[in-house]
Length: 470
Image 1: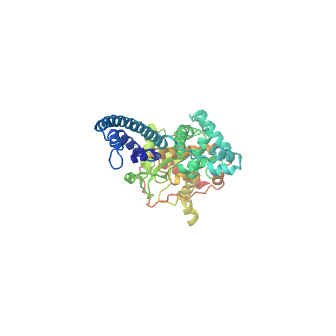
Image 2: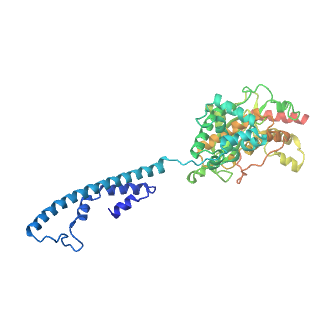
Image 3: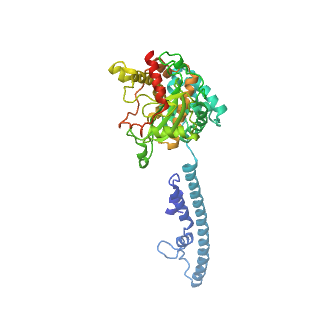
């Protein structure tokens, strides 16, 4: 049966649009088979001219009989044509349904394998870890021994578990690769031969584990600050003058990626959206406290006062008689020793304009040389993790968690890797202070409010007099 509509259906390529296939099914359900079938068999006994094909009998009776027989035969032919047409309609409907199911499967269920390289992520990772030590440092910012130890700690104590097709070490390596080189999701897909969904899920799992890890590792090694730091005790420039100093405090800015409608609070003196991060560190360049997530326009003083006054923040306050070093932007609170204002302070100023004159400048130079440990710690931290220089468009909460997690990894490397190249470079050059990746475009404002007299003024004067006697 040569039906153009049937041929169009029967020969249709059902790899096309799913909606078109479903519309064609509806057309077939509503197809008027009987009417067409009846029309197709009208005049079944006539020749091409419409004359009776049996002209050998001219009898009237025979004609009547022939008419009766023709009616019976016509009815039978109509029934047969209807049955045949319905049979073909069922086939067409089945074919359309199968095509629709196939289109749905191809579009929504079947996933053609994409990451099929022989050099899988685990095979590449094994090659890197068994190769030259620099390869692991270049890709993950830590040597193989430190990386394996980190994986063990996260799996044993902080809830990171392997999945059916991926080990803990591969999950951690994917996370480290992302934050170390600033890799995008697609770059991680290609490197480790996993789907984008898998990469994103593993990133979140490792980040969640590192949040718990950070609580344990970002804190003072000696919570009571009972002993003098070795870096002070072994250096006659600072001992015994700064024997009661426990660390240094400062703030830094990290690029933030926020929607344009919400950027105004995040744009401060850096001229671009940032988050302001307050941190305290020990004199071996380990972070003892971090508070990330503040808008870039927030003043350092506001963050500092909130940290030391809010008991829920768990800031490691110095005990009686001990103190942190802070710069001139912080208030003159007890337990936080700043420099003399209006005098030369930074190392570069003394290098350009000669030796200090007077006890205030002598104190300021010693204070600056000791307090720069926080700037050096920020430098090592930002130099190691490239993601901090250009934060991707993660949710802002995730961006804050990345900052904290990367600081926790900074501490872990300091404790576990004695030969780390970056730390070794800064240890050999105590005056090495890296340039900030985000220089100020607006002059930083001075501390808000007037300075009231403080017991720290007497502490500062005592140290200045002691230095002059040296």
